[in-house]
Amino acid sequence: MRAAGLPEIPERTALVAAAAFPKGTLAMRVREKLAEVFADEPFASAFGVRGAPGLSPGMLALVTVLQFAENLTDRQAADMAVRAIDWKYALGLELADPGFDFTVLAKFRARLVEHGMERLLFDRLVEHCRQEGLITAGGKQRGDSTHVISAVRDLNRLELAGESVRAALEALAVAAPAWLGQAMPVAELELRYAARVDSWRLPSSKTKRDRLAEVYGQDALALLHALQAPDAPVWLREIEAVQLLRRIFLQTYYVHTDARGREVVRKREAEVDGVPPGHLRLASPYDRDARWSAKGDELFWCGYKVHLTETCDDRAGARTRAPNLITDVATTVATEPDVTATAGIQHRLTQRQIKPGEHYLDSGYPSADLVIAAAGEGIAMITPLLADHSRQARAAEGFDKSAFRVDWTARQVRCPEGRTSAGWYPVRQHGHDAIVIEFARADCGPCPSRDKCTTAARGNRMLTLRPRELHETVAAARAEQKTDTWQAKYALRAGVEGTINQALDLTDLRRARYRGLPRTSLQHAYSATAINVIRLDAHWTEQTRSPRTSRLTRLAHQLAA
Image 1 (cartoon, rainbow, N blue to C red):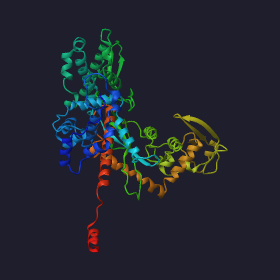
Image 2: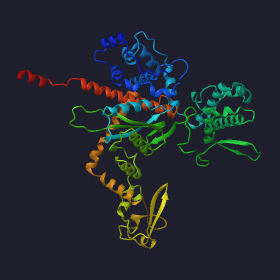
Image 3: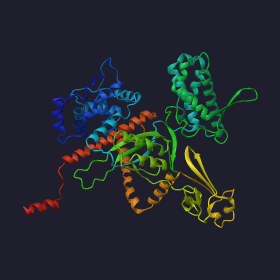
Image 4: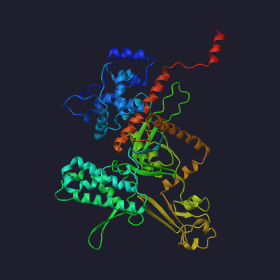
C-alpha cells in the first residue's frame, strides 16, 4: 500500500457532477466534508510494503460505507463506482475509469477482519464528530439491542449431524483428495453426502429418522478415527470443518462400548445423556459463532445480537440542533445477556472521551453492581432495576424483602410481625458478596402470618441481601422508578427504537451478510457508520436550506409591504 488517501477530484469529473447534481448528493457531500476520515495511514498495518500497488484502502472504505448506505451487494457497489457520476466524484475517479472487480471488496473486508480493524472507520468518524462538537462528553445517550439472523440455514439436530459430515468431507476432498480416497469409502459416502442434507425431505417415520441419525453418527465416528490414525497427516485435524465436526459429534452423540467390546453410537437424549448449554452448542457447520436463542415466548432465532448506543441530548432552544449519532456498536453471540455488554459499552465510550453523563437503558442492561460502578465513573444509569423475584413479590401478596427492616449496625432484621432475626451470615454467591438472614423456627412456627411469609419445609423464613450500599441503592432505585417524574424522564430511551428501525430499513441490520462473529461485527460497524453519514448529511442540508415560511406568513409580509 502506498498511503495517498483519496485522490484529487479530476476537473472534468467535478464539472459533470456539478452539472448533473447542482444541489449535490450524499456521496458528494461525504467527499467534501469527511475526506480526512477516509485516510490510508490508519490501515497501513494491514498491508505490505512490497509488491504491486493495491487500491487505496481509504477509497475502498468509502465505497463500503456508500454500499451500506444504499444497501447494495458487492457487485452493485462496484457497478456504481463505474456508472454513477456522484460516486466517481466521491472517489476521485476519471469519468472513463473502469473501476475495479467486485471481489476486491470481499478481500478488503477479509483483510480488515484478519487485522482486527472491523471498527476502525466507525471510530474515526466518531472521533471526527467529537472534534467538531457534534458529540460531547457528559451528555445523554441511550442504547438497546436487537436480534440478528445468521447467514446460514436453520438445521434441526438430525440435519446438523448429517451436514457436519458432508461439510468435513467436502473440505477434505479439496485439501487432501488422495488421502480421503484411501482412508474412506468415497463411493458409498457420495450416495449420502453429494447433496446438502436439507435439500431433500427427511423420512416421516421416527424409526427411519433414528436409523438415519445412527448412520450419520457412524460415518462421523469413522471419519474422526481415520483422521486420528498414525498415518494421517496431522494438519488435517486443524481444518475448521473437521474441528466443527468433532464438536457437533460430541454434542449430538453418545459413544459407549457394548458387551462384545464394540463401539456403539447413539443419539444423545437431553434428559438421559445431557447436552451442552446453549452458549456452547453449535448450530451450523458453516458458522461456529451462530447460536440459537430466545426472547420471551415468541421470538426464536439463530445468530447474534447487536447493541447500538446513540446520543439523545435535548437541546431545546438551540439554533442548530446536533443530530443524534451512534456512538458505539457491539455485536455479541445470541446467548449473551444484555447485562454482560454494559460495562464494555461504557468503557469504550470513556476511552473515546464521549462518556455520557446519563445513560438510558432498558431493564436487561443494569445490575446493582454496574449502577454503583458507573456512578463512580460519573455515569448515571437511567434504567429500571429488575424487581424482586421472590415468590411473595411475584404473587403480589405476602411479605417480600421490602417488608423487612434491616438494622445494619446491629446486624439484625425485623420482620413485619416484630420478630428479630436469629442469624446473620456473610457469604459468597455466584461470585458476589451476599448476606444470608435466618429467622428462628421457634418464632416462625407459631407466627399467625407464616403462610404469607414462607412455605419452606424447614418452617422458618430466610432472606438473602446484598451488602448495605448495594441493598440501599437497589431499594432507592426501585422506589424512584415508580414515580411519574422518573417515568417521564425515562421515556427518552424509547427513541432508540427509531434508530434500530432506521438501521433495519436502510442497512438490513437484522440479517447477517457474512458468516462468523468477526465479519458480522464488521457489517454492523459499517452499518452504524452509514447511519451516521446519512444523519450527518441531513444535518448539513438542513443548515444550508433556507428556513421555510408558511403561505400565511408570506401573505402577511406582502400586505405589510
